[in-house]
Amino acid sequence: MPRPTRARINLDALRHNHSISRRHAGSAHLWSVVKADAYGHGLLPAALGLQSVADGFALVEFEGAAELRAQGIRQPILMLEGIYQPDDINLCLDYALTPVLHDLWQIDALAAAALPTAIPVYLKLNTGMNRLGLSAEGLHQALRRLEAAGCVSSVTLMTHFADADDERGIAEQMARFAANTNGLNLPVSVANSAALLRFPDSVAMAGNWARPGIMLYGSSPFSNEQSAQELGLRPVMTLQSEIIAVQQLQAGDRVGYGGTFIATAPTRIGIVACGYADGYPRHAPTGTPVLVGGQRTRTLGRVSMDKLCVDLTGLEKVGAGATAILWGGDEKAYLPADEVATAAGTIAYELFCALAGRVSIEYVE
Ligand SMILES: *Cc1c(COP(=O)(O)O)cnc(C)c1O
Image (cartoon, rainbow, N blue to C red; front, side):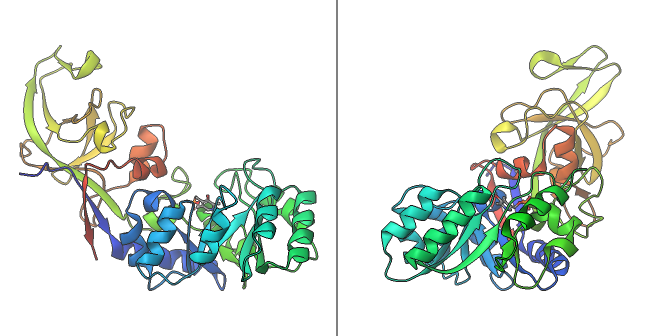
């Protein structure tokens, strides 16, 4: 029999969440961000699931972009990290990909490639994230070089926010972006999920493109202030397994590696077939929420490679064979991945992306 550790991906919820991003975007277009195997949800199923509603897809992997084309995806595809080497420009032409150019060597590579047809490009401006992006001076040089080379069919100006989800917000970066692109009169793309949800009026203008990622997968970019449910987002990924054994502890009994949990009273515990080799975070401490038999309880002790332990106190009817939902679920029983992530000191992005290859995925339309 197959191991009961499975992920279920709800494509209807994915489309629903896309419709929420559409509502915030007004008349702006939407790149559906599907990098990192669609945040662990499976690139092709996610993209095909969104095909009827997406304006375009954004990712960082050329192999993934080629796969999308091979599957008949016709929408524009944005390469968020641009080209990695000069040759990649040919892939942009062959697969009709729009590269984000964030460094002058990429501009020069494009100009030197002398492509038979002009291609659309994004120019990325660094406005304070200090990760990728041209300086203000670099942007104007890039524009001059591209114009001289005559090799682009359109230019969109882009930046990325460092604090769209926290107190700093986007004002400072937006001001810098505006000051350095003033008078260019080109379409812009600035918003990730957090900016789109929090500042729709400043980012969702006609002709522009927003770049929602995490919200499509049903997680809140600011889970501590506003939950996914409050944002109207539905969970897309459910990670579930089963209780494969039950133990009766006495006071003083220890649980798992290192015995980091010690029972203070007689305690029934369940052993769930899911561990860090499935993508469950090893650093999730005792007390991390979990749903067992549809009811909320907590993990106990250290997470192992293939197993974790849960408290069955008050869940007398639950025994071996009961379903354990590690995150996700449905209307009847739902554990937001954001809550598990917070308990484990991380973000749902990381939980989703870490879903391990050995977990079989079932797609539900
Ligand atoms: C990943 C990414 C996004 C999407 O961000 P979310 O927080 O998941 O919405 C948008 N823009 C760029 C440049 C990215 O790399």
